[in-house]
Image (tube, rainbow over all chains, first blue to last red):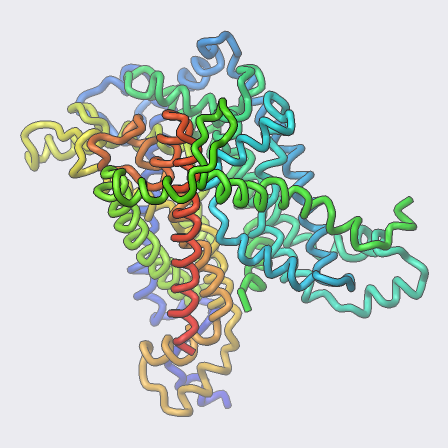
Amino acid sequence: MKKRRSNFQGMKINPSRFHRSQLIFYILLVPFSILMLLPIVFIFNHAFKPIGELFAYPPRFFVRQPTFDNFIELGRITSSSGVPFSRYILNSLFVTLLGVGAAILITSLSAYGLSKLKFKGKKFLFEVNTIALMFVPIAVQIPRYLIIAQSGLIDSYLGHILPVIVLPVAMFLLKQFIDQTPNELIESAKIDGASEMEIFFKIIFPIILPAIATVGILSFQVLWNDVTTSILYINDESKRTLAFFMMSLTSLQGNTVAGQGMAAAASLIMFIPNLTLFIFLQSRVMNTMAHSGIK
Amino acid sequence: MIKRMNRPAWFIVPYWSLFLVFIILPVIAAVFLSFTYFNAIETPEIIGINNYVELITIDTVFMQYVLSNTLRFALIVGPFGYIMAFLLAWMLAQIPKIPRTILAIILYSPSLTLGVAMAAMWRIIFSGDANGYLNAILLSNNIILEPIQFLSSPQYLMTIMIIVSLWSSMGVGFLAMLAGVLNIDQTLYEAAYVDGIKNRTQEILYITLPSMKPQLLFGAVMAVVTTFQAGMIGVQLAGSNPTPQYAGQLIVNHIEDFGFIRYMMGYAAAISVVLLLIVYALSKITFRVLGDKS
């Protein structure tokens, strides 16, 4: 057995240590990754450039004397209608935190229902959800707008949240994940007299935390990055979010050199929370993705 | 109270009522409105299939630019992004965990910027004056003599849109495929070599791809959807809708142009229906192509 393994020249998945045969992958992957990373390195550098370096010709990629000037300037400016930058950040934080919580709750309840409960039509609902994976929200912006206008959600914080927290992808991943949990746990809890809801919160929820983390990340991304809700459903400037402010900053000042530094700083503020969250939760996400297949 | 919550409705209703209101109803409303004349003020007036007829016969912008741009954009970004995601995942699976995780985070992170966050930066890099980063590099190396108007000239806009979209296309589908390759049973490969598989190409064709078919399908759907969802990029880069000489005009921009700029909502709804049908058809075709491999 040992001898055959050492002769085996094919694919070695998830190797535990470096081997000469992996060199080719490093040679291809590392330069490519660096290339992919360049725009992000650029934005990091640009955000910390003092005004003199933003004006410099020829322009430089790396910052020489990093300052926080751009961030301070960003904190100082207000939008044309007098809403301060901090207000947009607070709005974004509020909408995102509440939205992520709501998304996790409704998605996991439905996923548990479709996976473990017995009722008529659950297969059908899951099929509908799988078709909805192909749903492109941007395509139906207009009817969505009309529905939101009819339901009185215009200028309400809920207008930021409700339309974007229905994520068929998240529901799909979570349901596939719950399918893997053993039924025996549920059965024995039932014998002890627990209700379905108790079983869900006390037994299932702790087991599916990796997948919950994934749902959290996915919903965080849509809520934090979304501009369409601010553009279409919110007329009150003081209720719009950071992503919207970013976009108006880009179109107003992105082309002037002084505005560039601020735009880069704001881009960084948008990007960092996304990245940090993913870095912390990436192993859980990978764990969820193992069950992501469409069968 | 929680002790008595046994009925499936407690679990199903919250998600599915939002699903109904924000996914199913908009699709039905789009189909209904597509058969009407509707200017957002008066009540919709039913005009049969006129919108569709107009779309095909009168809307020269749609037939001449939008449709071909969309197909070109989708057929390059979708398949290339998908194949790239698979190859990267396949290579990553064959190096140890720590470097793999670092590289995977780097490759995935551009997809986090989808949307507005990075549009500002691309506009700085591709800025049309001599101070734009790409122009400065090209000028100082004497590759060009005058700065190029990258974002406002039709010949470059589409290429830049494709590059930017490919850059940010290693998203959820890529992670799923990476997990898929990692989860293939190692003994399958060993057995296959005993059975006479000779090289890496055969290995991919006979073992890797068939074993991760569920993830491949998931990745394919994600690739189709994110490609169409990324359609706003042209308008963000150029800073105007319509884009210069319609060079970066995709279906989603055309919908916005007619719906929210000209308030021809019935007509815009007809375009929406066409878009949904295209996405659905492309997903089905991809399913069939991938399904045949096993």
